[in-house]
Length: 349
Image 1 (cartoon, rainbow, N blue to C red):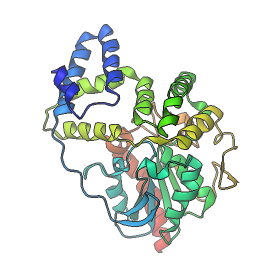
Image 2 (image 1 turned 45 degrees about the vertical axis):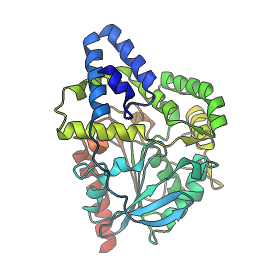
Image 3 (image 1 turned 180 degrees about the vertical axis):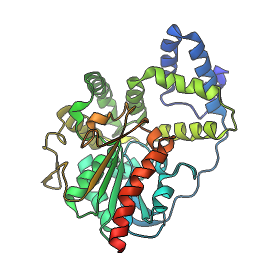
């Protein structure tokens, strides 16, 4: 069973590290490790449903696209992270954040960052200045911005550079010095080890970032595969697990300037939280002129709530991804409805 999982094209990246995590957990809990390997086999052999065709593209700069997801009313531009694909915001009809916002009386646009090679020379700041701000400007009206994870960090920065109606950040870091010391040390060590090879390749492979995420909670990484082994293969829960894991494993590599700024400037120096982050010749400020709503997740290990622009603004009982596609999404939608619907109603009135 385990051998067939290793041979299948669908498996966690990097697979050797995942198996090492299983081995370590197995030393303490052999039953959990066995169940995790069963779950790995289920994941590897699961039937994938075809993904819907992307929404129409209305603007393009380089390889980055602005896609139009429809809806009526004032515009909202959704900004995903640079680290994982954008379709987490429209994973399936039952959990689609895109669809939920369109139902709030908004016209929804989504940034699609495209392939990494089209952005090879850009830092995070460069992405904001040369791609994000012009794409937002192509909407033709002063939009609201909603950014998820690093996309929220970038949304707040963009709101320093152009007029926006309002900003929402979801699980977005801004005060990077509030990450736990162990997580900071681990990330910097991974970067030191990976940087020579990444520089030669021209990008930091997704596998390196995945290893960093897994190291935050190895037991949970293994346990979630054990949980998959207990689900009915044709259940909605199992299908969504597969879709989520595929999403997590499909991220584009990070261009070297992007990785360097993220790890050396934002994480190591906290340039955003300390008021030293320069983008487009301006200092990025957490406080902006437009109304802002910052939503965090209480069980988030990737972006702890205390790293948010305003820690504790609104905290949901969820994890980093669960706040978007898990049970807590209904609470998220309620918060967004009040913030975005009210704004839309005022503008239409």
